[in-house]
Image (cartoon, rainbow, N blue to C red; front, side, top):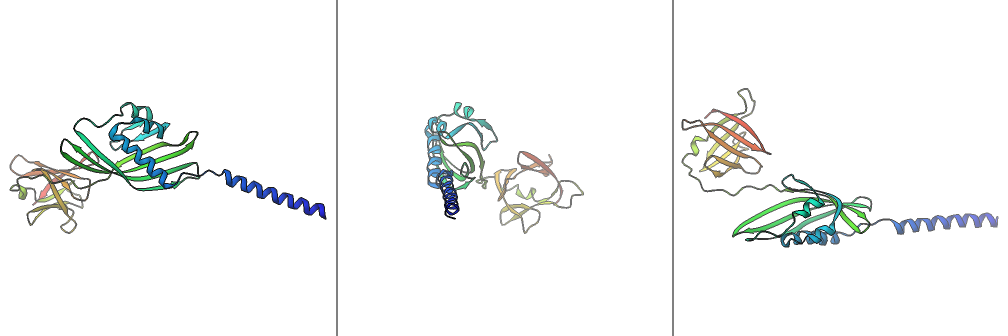
Length: 249
């Protein structure tokens, strides 16, 4: 009886020690503050062109996809790395950073980049949404993938001659048998476009015949008919053009 109890106790102690050892060795990702500090350091290094910071943070097999759709390896990114050109300055702030733990050996980090840039006196302000994937490896936590996308915003209006705006007003369709139309309205001295008057949003002028559709990523280009009127409007969307012929006033 004594020997049996001793055996049971030994097994229980062994299981407890094994559990404690496994818990002690369980992988753990850095805290959010570490990722915040590491990410901010990367973008601080962009303006100065300090590639050492990026070389240390990126895994050798890292893949980077930028806001222009260009995909690069670590070596390709570092090859063209350098400071801002003469006459340019700027700053980048990392905001709303969130970390998702993938089992202690990897993590997904998502954040917003708020970029302020001065190009010879012209002020530029752009925001990007960014996702980095980290992997735990010898030498610490490294970025193995990074993807950047521009956060859309309305374009700033350009002063244009508004006397021709009434010629833009009318109904446009992709084809004569299309069930929906694109309408252009002139209300209180401003142009609006949309499927109907209630849902139409402002057309922000970029030139007399080119307008940005507020609240979207669409640019509307009006094409003259050569007779003083408008023949069609082309909706530029994701590097494609959709033509809509004028069908009525």
